[in-house]
Amino acid sequence: MEEPEQITSSKIQTMIEGFFWYLPNIGIGLLVLLGFWIGGRIAARAVAYAFARRKRADLGMLLGGTARWSLIACGLLVFATIVFPSVRPADLLTTLGVGSLAVGLAFRDILQNWFSGLMILYSQPFRVGDQIVTGEYEGTVEHVEARATLIKTYDGQRIVVPNSNLYTRSITVRTHFPTRRSQCDVTIGYGDDPAIACEAVLRALSSIEGIHRDPPPDARAWEFAESGMVIRVRWWTDSRRNHVVAAKGRAIAAIRSALRETQMDIAYPTRMVLFHDQTEEFDGDRTRQREGWPAGDSPPSPRPLSTTTLERRRRKQEGEE
Image: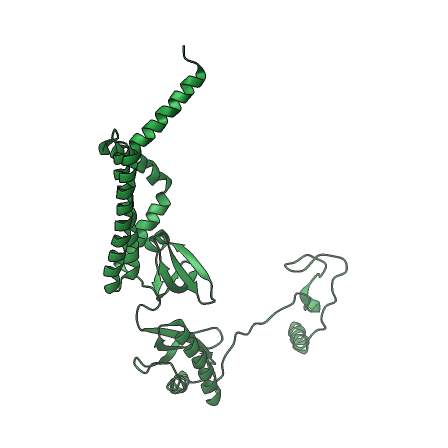
């Protein structure tokens, strides 16, 4: 019976002999894997270059990266079959098929974002540099990656939005068209003529920098409000936000000046506030609880009777007599 030390040494010797026996296969496999790796880099650059010439650089980078890693994965399969001749490619593909189902379930969100990014780059509902609104976020598209889209907000923050959210939800593309319409509502008094107000507003907007002449600005009476007549003013500017904001500020200031020059009354909401302790002497039992009035033996003192009330009571007494 062999000693344990002899068994261990024989195993080590067998492993060393097996390593040297597999060494040529390992070397050939590494060379093949290196070739696939180099081929993947070349394929990625070729795909990126081809799509960059078509001004689809983001799509080219996404597809190029996919081609690169696909070739590397194929290289790993070839490497395994060279190093371990007993392993058949069919067995590897079967194993990968079962494993890919588990991987797909585990990385479902990642794969969903990847396919959504691919569809976004292919259909191009928006492009890099466009200003979009998605959900509660608004800003300029910086880059579309495999997993997410990077958006720079107007106050200098970066928002990372998953591609699946952009692909399945509604998006407002502010800069899809070269011009955009803005508007504001102005309320004038009911005693003023809306036609004169509209004419004054249009005359003021005709000289504002950034407001397009075609289509021309528009102003018209819009609706009856509680405190006056509403005039809706609309104009067109460049669709980029900095042009929209700058032109709107100038337009509002010019509208105010024009209405003041024509002596228009810019109406504002008015309200009347009634306090419950302003009751008069004939209001009844003031110790009882009423709406907004607490019950108690020491109620607030009533207001003196007004002249109108005294006159009304006098006439009533004379009528009874």
